[in-house]
Image (tube, rainbow, N blue to C red; front, side):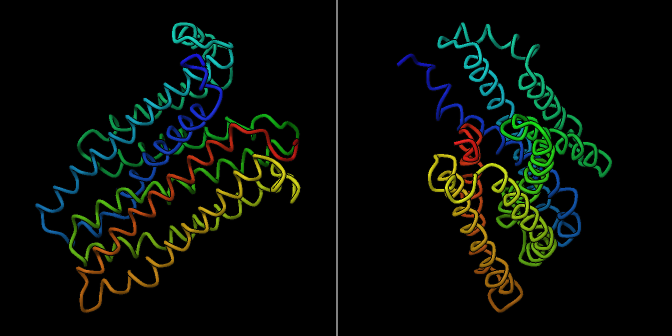
Length: 307
């Protein structure tokens, strides 16, 4: 097998998933800092707040860097696939053609440019105005996911509904799952009172995102899986069932955090509860990443409705 033949299979799907996951992370990291953290930071001492701010900046830069690297590799592999190239040189030569003459290439470059601008917009001083601009850039970059994959290829009225559904789906995923890494970092650094306030502010936003994710996943499943026959009779259907199973596990973890561990932050042993939440959010993040990677595999498979 030529070394880059994997571009048309699992390798391309995983690179796509990593690119999307990093984009979601960038959005969630900014939303967490803009909407959830300011009141909670006021409950921490200055050294702890400064340490967390530095960790937050590193997380933002890491998310953007991962999105740019994975996005560039996605562009390289997909360009090679479109051109039928298997060697690195031939794949690289196909990139300008894909960027200039395909919607995929053009939109992906726009997304990468928007993401690259995010950390420079914030710099080292996360003022509300700068955070708002960075959030807008990340929102547009994330919403462009609707221009890729099945939503952009089915045609007709279904295309518009799927595009809107995909846009809402990825934005909700970014606002919920993308906030888990900075929340995990916050739980490691802040006192229980600050952690409790951040979690109370995160909880209703997370519930709203879960509702949007469930509704849009149902809409996409109805439009693409192809009923029971498509769910159990095609690779797309089995991948979608795997994604739904992971989503159910994610909801179970979130419920444990909300109804069992969170109340203990204001009980007799808040430090132990915070350690438990810290571990649980780490597991929740891992399951969320698995869901996004599975979605990358889904996007590379033909829909069950046409199977």
